[in-house]
Length: 313
Ligand SMILES: [Fe+2]
Ligand SMILES: [Fe+2]
Image (cartoon, rainbow, N blue to C red):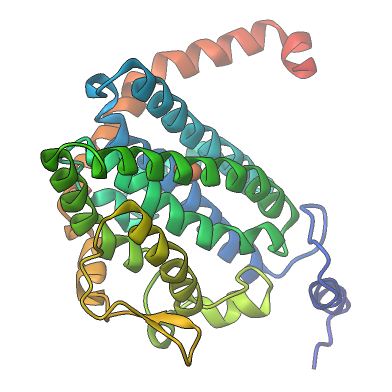
């Protein structure tokens, strides 16, 4: 029974599938939960630039380099939309970056794996951006307006990312035997972390039930995982590559693919800081942030000198 009139109004908006806007009253828990989720999402976009950025200077052709640069730049843009969406909830972007640097806010564990060969760029586009889309499409209907609207644009770009990853991996898979082997090796390494990227199993997911009630999350982790596998399993056949899951097969009765149990113990380990690249990713971000201090100072000084221009912008 909801006695607070604010809360009743809030719940009525959620129940009628309307959007909550920054000016609307919202429960503290809703605000906190969204700040945590949007910040984690923003950090993931920004940290996610590192594994692929690693290959920009070594892309095999000018065309591939231009595509990869555009993709990595898109991820920076996603980070910016999301930090802006978080700011509408009353936090400051600098505050969120500090929390990331202190290890008090997380980013997606998938970005703590190394990119060992060029084929990893294709595998990331196909699998990691694929898992991201699976997760993000329902967020376009999330109950918080600024987050939902940011997601619409992000999803359009993510779907382009997934196609370019698929195309890049297809070219390698159908190239020389060495290139095919490189593509297969990348899929062997990225498959399970991508399946795990949809989060812990429903039985262990701590935030899910409340997020579903608030219309932030629309489908459970396991539902999203099934959706992801159903999307990429047939694509692997077209690619001519074999996912490293002996239990992966079409189940006629269920109308879905069956698949093996992901190693959630590994996911927990990587999430809690013990993945192959956790320390490297955090140190790199901190160093880049420190090196960029003069740019932020210069921009702030310019804005202070030209208040009319910055107000118009
Ligand atoms: Fe992105
Ligand atoms: Fe992406």
